[in-house]
Length: 355
Ligand code: ADP
Ligand code: MG
Image 1: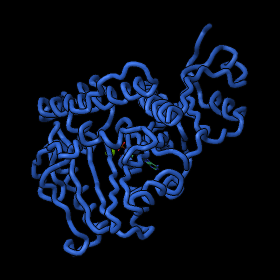
Image 2 (image 1 turned 90 degrees about the vertical axis):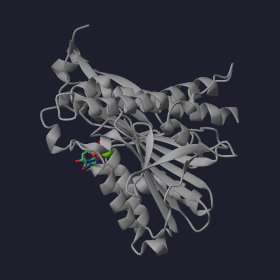
Image 3 (image 1 turned 180 degrees about the vertical axis):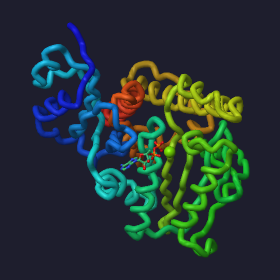
């Protein structure tokens, strides 16, 4: 079959014929781990590229090309790769996203539990936008916060964003959990400033801690931890961009190229370790001989271990917000992101069924 490059009109025709979005199954309210795809809107800098993603409830279609029939009559004969997660969204504003997938995590923390909201995806897909919007919406909703900690993981090392980027160690506690030792925990009162402003300060430090100006934030994983009066905690994680090594090389012409390349390798390694943990979590969720999951391979996976527990009895209620760009330009990264998101989702569903 001859295949042709897809044009927006083909995607339009495909969408016109799409049935109403199916209800999430299992319902979101029953999930301890929820995996959601957020496709960011088309922006000015996307001009010149075509639509490549259609979201329809739990189903996400990544459009690759059209067959000749589709090209000629635009009846929607689009070749797409379909992914299934718990939910997806392309048009919701930040407030509705918060209400649908984040508020329940915040509620869990309010009751004294642990919650985690993670943003994953390639650089430019909207991770930082979403994490900041979710924190802002939480602040606006009047959630009481007693203390806050912020740190980033860069080159497999932890830096305290509330203490001049001081480097800190990660140690395993008596409970077997890994924790950052000596992390500054700023009490809301002691801070003498709104928690929101403390976070703004931390974000600024994240973006200036290194020497090269070109998109610092995509090269580190940022953690923002809020402590609630109930004793519960809530962690927002803005992961580094999940692009691959080939992308890292394209920056090597720039200043501090060696250091940058080294950082990129470390980031790729930590994200690779994360992907491997997700893959093996899925393998194990299918029953059979249980594989060792290499959480200890990097600081990132050590710190995320409890959040990556997909069992319905997991100690942490987690929402994974997997971000993709809407255009053909990011097609291969979109497919890569959704592959891992789907593994995480399948593992969650299998663990729920087995319970
Ligand atoms: P990432 O952190 O994944 O690299 P960003 O959050 O920096 O991506 O987003 C890249 C660009 O897209 C920014 O200019 C941001 O303002 C814009 N953007 C991302 N998501 C949205 C959204 N949901 N609505 C409007 N603009 C968005
Ligand atoms: Mg970012």
